[in-house]
Image 1 (cartoon, helix red, strand yellow):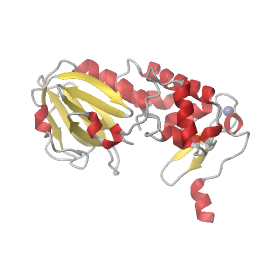
Image 2: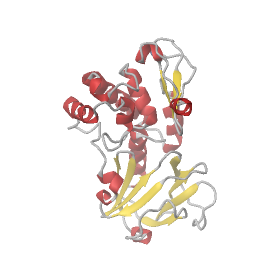
Image 3: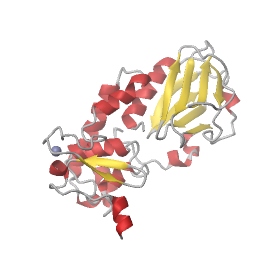
Length: 283
Ligand SMILES: [Zn+2]
């Protein structure tokens, strides 16, 4: 799933290709993905793209007063096309929507797999989208400080820090992968209560992890970003591999619909955390 660093890089890549260009049309073939009907997608025709930005993990393509807001979800992606072959008419394969510029170039929004959860909104203001309006602060915003994080952690109380970092209403843009990485850098157990952690070291880990990932992603086209993200993970997705810091074997916890990884020596005082699915079955 693309998280803050990848969406930042995608927004920069799309911004450089789209800004100042005129939209010919948006074809949406995945009607499950399109969450709005007013204005209709035909309202994009003949509008000029003025900016491409990011809100949390959402891409925000601005076309004079309208915002095309896309959440790529777990398996969504953007594929640039120098030339769009033909109008999209039916949903087949992974393509959910296609944006075409007046010179025939453009991009496809694709989603792999059978469980589709990408969302596409066309709105006059991104805050019309409830999940955007309720996003927590952006951890890379200039006004996000150690004190901001201290307030978030205090409000979360005894909730586990891993869940707090992933909760988009508390802090925007961090998902399963980067929360694993941040907690490894901060040497924190994923299950540590939010109000017990060292705020400064967690803050520094958030900043360095996200900024390093953005720096690595910069200049890469959308097509290269996924590989770039995977190859630079320290613990996430590296079950049974050696921790790059201490050499211990990376462990994982399995939930019903996701897994996460951590290093016992670096993060949990050598303790192996138990699988939550198994726990529930045994109780
Ligand atoms: Zn380690």
